[in-house]
Amino acid sequence: MRATRCNSLARRLVYGLVAFQALVLIGGILTEPLRESRTPLSQWLAAEEAVRLLAPSIGREPGGRLVLRPEPVLTAYMEANPGFWFFATDGDTLLRGGVDRIDKSEGDSEEAWRALEGTTRYVSTSAGRVAILLGGQRGDFWAGLRGWLTDRLWRIALILLVAGLCTTAVIIGLVHLLLRPVRHAARAAAALTPGQQGPHLPVEKVPAEILPLVNATNAAFARLEEENERQRRFVANAAHELRTPVAILGIRLDELPESAAKHKLRQDVRRLSLLANQLLDLERLHHGGARRESLDLVALARDVVADMGPLAIEDGSSIAFSSEVPRLDILGDEQALRGALSNLIGNALSHGGKGGLAELRIRHDGVVEVADRGAGVPAEWRERVFEPFQRAGGGTGAGLGLYIVREALRAHGATIELRDGEPSGALFRIRFPA
View 1: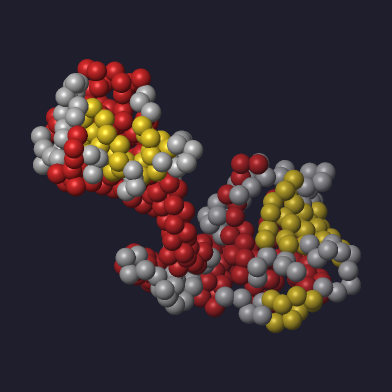
View 2: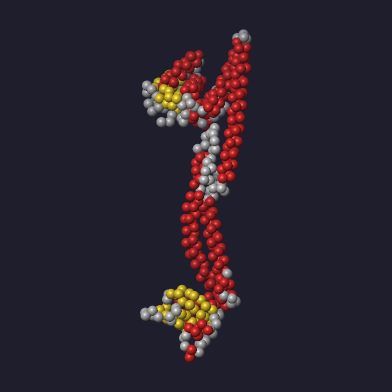
C-alpha cells in the first residue's frame, strides 16, 4: 500500500502567502498605467519602450557631469521617430535630445523644460536616478506590451524569491512555535494506556482553533473507557455468578457413579472453573492494577514450582528449577506474579507431553525463562498466543492463560517473548525493568 504524502500546514501557509504576494504584485503591475498616467495605454507603453532605450545611453563624464552617449538602438529609434524628443536631468545638468521643441533663446533652462507637455519618468541609470521628460514617442502596441511585461516579470521573480524565502523561514518558525501544544498533546496521546483516569490529552495552551478537536478526543476516550468499564463489570459479574453453579455441578458429579461420561464432564467442569477464575484474575488486574511491594522473585518462583509439583506428578511429567542468583529483589504484586508463573508452568506441562520436562530458570541478569520439551509453537502463532481466547497446539484451556500472563507482566513494566526452546519445545523469556 502506497503511503500518502503528509499534508504540511507550514507548506500550505507558505504556498498560500507566496501566491497572495504574487497576485498583489501582478495586480500592481497591471494597474500601473492607470495609476501613473491618464494617457491612452498605447502612448504609455510607447513611453515605457522609449525610456528603456534611453536609460543605457545616459552616463557621466570623468568630472561627474551628466552626459548623453547614444547607443545604436537609441539612434535607430530616433531616426525611425523624427518627432521624438526628450529632456533628462539629475538636478544639476539638463540633457536634451531629439527635435528642437523650445526656442534657442530660451536655452536649456529648467523653466523651459517644465513648460513642455510630455510624459515624465524617473529611471535608474548608470549615472544614478534621473528624471526624464519625453514626447513624440511612437511604437507598436504589442511590442511595447511584451517589452513592458518582460521588464517587470524579472523584477517580480526577484521579489518573490526574496519574499518567499523570508516567508518560508518566518512561517516555519511560527508553526513550530504555535503548534508546540499540539505536539505535546500528540506525545500525551502516544503515551495513553488503557484504564487511564482523568483527561487524556492536555488542554493547557492549546490554540482555540484546535481546542474543540482536543476536547472531542477526550470526550471520545471517556466514552470508550466508560464502555470498557461497563464490559469489565459485566465479565466480572458473570464470572462471579458462574462460580456458584459450577461448584454445585462439581458436587453433583461426585454423586454419580464412575464412568467415561463422568470423567469427560469433570474435565468440562474444571475448564469452566478455570475460565471463571481467569476472568476474575483479569478483572482484578484491569481494575486494581498491580500492587507494589518488595519481594524475592527467586523464593516466589521456588514456591510456585513446589505448588505445581503434584500436578506434574499427576500428568506423569517433571519440573526443574534453577537460579544463578541466590536472591532477586523486585517491586511487584505477589499474587499477580504467582499467577503468571503458575500459568506459564501449567502451559509448559500441558504442551510438553507425557513424561515431559518443564523448566523454570532465573539467570544472573534477572531474566526469567520457562521452557518445555514439546513440539514448540509455529512462528506465525508466537504473537497470537498472547491474545485472548487463542489456543495454539489444540490446548484444552480457555485461551486466557497467556493473555493474563502478559497483562500481569505489563502491569509490572515487564515484557515477555516466545522463542524456540533448546533443543526443542517453547521458551518464554521474561525481562523485568531495571
